[in-house]
Length: 465
Image (cartoon, rainbow, N blue to C red; front, side, top):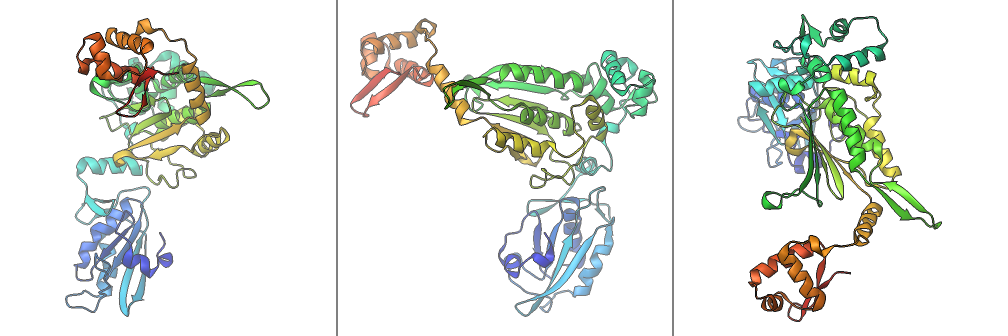
């Protein structure tokens, strides 16, 4: 948002948001500091002075209004180097002062009394101690991956994995020297990056430094008695081992489909091209916020889409809007080692290539979101061709009625021999409660074994073709 491009109509009519706020000239000039700090600590924004919250232009000439110069002096009371452009503009014969606050990319901005604010939606939120630390991690002012795990020793290292890394580097350094050279070990103790990359048991020190692979029946997660998880695997090894193990398992879980092409030849298509889901998983593992221990990375496979969930919002200057061409690593040491292993590309090509490969496979664009502004979620949808192939495959599967539960089998038998009966008629024939029959019918319909034919009053159930 650049102030010279902002129209007067926008200043008056637009709702306050993540990048824009209005303030009356009657407020104390010192009171705009928290908004300046908040914008600087977030993604920047514009602060308009002389406009009421409802968009009314009141300027600087009214009763109790402060002078323009007083507001121009206020930014100097900020603790930190904030880049601010300003413009004085006349709207409806009244003066308005516009501040354009640029984002601080490498350090946290504070007020002179050491308070830290962050722009969240249309509010400038005061942060507590833990939130300030998280912001410092995001800005790169401090890095969680560099913290030393005092309880750790070289005995925690996966020697085989570290030896493989030594071969990749083609170095004569000892294993201990390699860790020290990459700042993964300091004075005999591993850092969190060292534990995550080469630890035997990383979850010993970071319980949620794991990846869960979940496969569901259907298109969404159910709960309670309807819980529809059909496979769950937890990966808790060092990151390079996790990546390889997940890659193998994903290949076994994702399906290939055959279809008859226009040339009369059967061709095979994958449910998803490999690069988008593999890059999505590697990105989640590489860039997640490991200091947040309330959740873990989750890969969820559904019939019509897959989701890759990573704790921690997008780092620093990266946003949903610019992520295709903006690169910033929250964990540069982890990223470097994974680059040397061949999993991560240092050039900013990953996200863009995910888009490109999905489009080349005639699939919908990937969907990136930030649930609750504290995590990143990548959703990939599979193709309509794959869905049709799966439905057709299911229809052609030989159905064995003896695999049904007892009451569903009874109902199935009655409908097979007497198609067109309703639930009441079936219950009378089987001398069972109608509610019990309705439950069995619901189960059979969910399995797409039977369907209702006719009107509500004059209709009944038949075997689905």
